[in-house]
Image: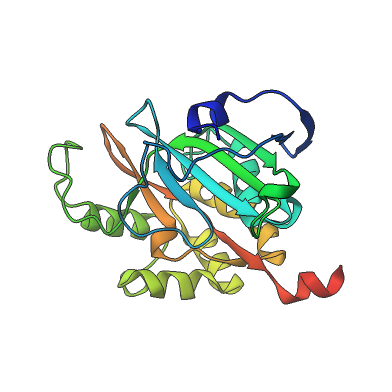
Length: 235
């Protein structure tokens, strides 16, 4: 089996595109689980696994196994992010590819998406002293930023309450109307049509933080969950 480095540079057997992401037919699967990059410590994703990038400490390699990329919320998010790289509330994507796995290597998934993207932090990391000048507490800074984009203090008491609050379309409309950040409003407006197809999954673990020299920036990561029942009935 081949490794992450070959995954990231594989260019042959391109069979199409889904949005902005090329689809590549693999002749053999790649051995990403045993790659020396290693999984990132912390809370693992429900639908994806992040690995340390083999060369860059500021990037990660995100691996998403799926049955149908046309119906996958992760694919929808990466395509949306690729189309809006100038909006800081979307993750910065360096490269993304979808691989159609060989028949003999399909263990519960027919496709695998590999995303080379920026390294983000969870809001719950307590101390970032030495990583980012201007603040010593990422949690407090994140709460302040959430308030600035429209969420009230009672709504950000814990990550689960954030998810429950933002799963409601009327609450998302409220946040868009009262947010003080036009780029956040733009990001939420562009995401809103997708919530008809996918369940909203904007809980605290999916609102990440980008560390910058001027302070932390919130990033909306993995906002789309599984398909909604209403969408399934329509197709």
